[in-house]
Length: 393
Image (cartoon, rainbow, N blue to C red; front, side, top):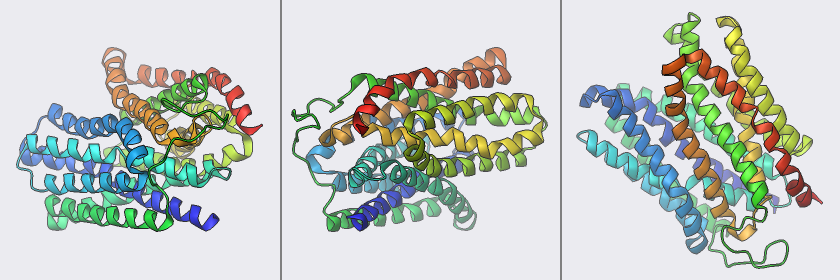
């Protein structure tokens, strides 16, 4: 049983690596596309919005379809669709073609988070689920670091079209391996409706504790919007403190390195300290860390970025593992889909909202606001005490 669970986790981690690699090579390709096709900044932004919008819009349908088709087949199909979208992008001749390819690829990638999270949480029911989900989240960060750098290097040798299509072919191979691995493990098939933990047939979205799920989702919204907005405006703060463009790259690398470690460590920390205490610890550390950056000189800011990255990203592993405590097992895929949709939507909207604030009052005011808003998660944890206590009783 342990070996089987680890195999499921390994498959989910590999899939996460591949999909996050697709998502973040877009950042590498945007300036290349801008130069080649003469795009303005609004068009560049719209390309990223198309991919993110495709991901957000497909989450809930993916969760629903998984109950009929099974997670394994749908996860493999989504991976193949994403790969085909990037293969097509390698042949695109202009802005509209790229826009459609990225929308198509984003729709394919929308299956990955809810279905992989569902598979991992099922495999580790009654076990170290948060640690497993923390490992799963960590694998995505490895993809974010390794794949864009590799594609960027390859693009200097063979051009962006060949580099993009090359990685996409690996994505197609990954799709075939996913369905083969999960079929061999006999997991990820379609599920029939089962009684929930209280003995009654589950229905609707399978949410057993609506108040707890809403509170968890609210924490997720604040956590995601904080992370995205902070990473958007951090470079401007550092430039104001005298940073060079090269140092900005180092700074972001430090945040991402801390974030990868935080995703891995905080899932395990929640198993030891409990969900409530871990969320309070990571969110309070995030808020304090962001506010400290405003007062520190540039060197102090750089020293702060690794521990801040741990707190900034660590909460997500705890939240993902807690979803399964609040929903029925047979509706888990659709519940994760709702949860991820809420979070991705918040991530998409927050840079624009905080951008308006920056235009009005400056970056320091924006980051101060972001740091203060983080503390709004603390009272929300009170609504999680009763449902989480019930699941561990």
